[in-house]
Image 1 (cartoon, rainbow, N blue to C red):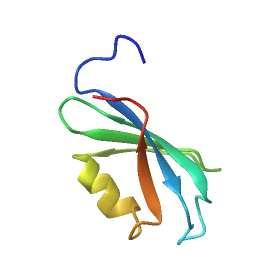
Image 2 (tube, one colour):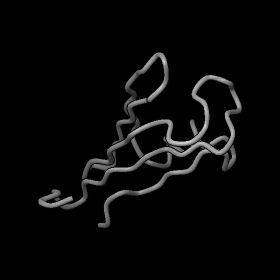
Image 3 (tube, rainbow, N blue to C red):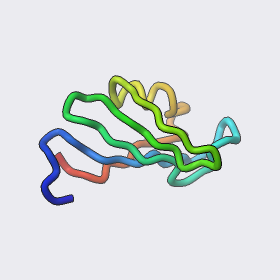
Image 4 (cartoon, helix red, strand yellow):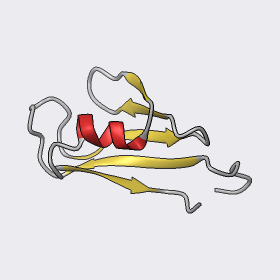
Length: 77
């Protein structure tokens, strides 16, 4: 992505197993990590929503499901 501000990164959540039966598997959410470290994720489910987290670690803590969902970075910084 050209002209990306320093520290700003895009990612997706990729789910290998849908533990809760809600979001499915594969590419389930789009995310942005801002230079402050805060993250926003937008779910690609039948009932889409947007959530804000203080850190990428919090995103993993809430949605990682012990490695069943992983973050795939789209930007290098």
